[in-house]
Length: 62
Image 1: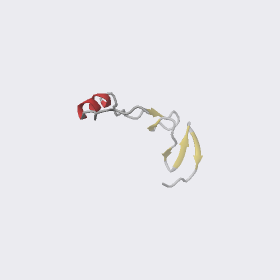
Image 2: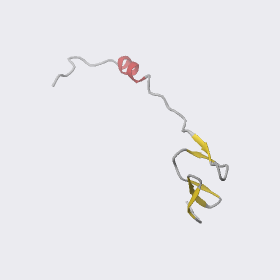
Image 3: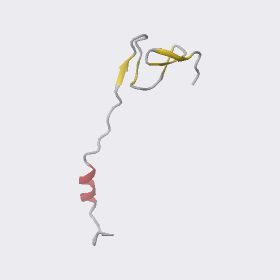
Image 4: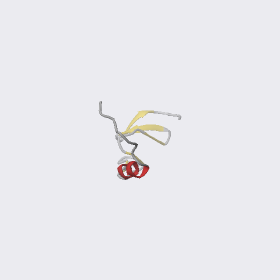
């Protein structure tokens, strides 16, 4: 297995990592309730667990 002969500098490692960025989650608006939620995730609306505009669990508590 090839191994580095000398240690890589901190600057060299930092240059490689500069392309990693934090991205904000994509938000959507529910067609039936108008609530804003994270895409492709179930969300609580008026005490019900909703997914794709349909009630999954009624009376949902966190």
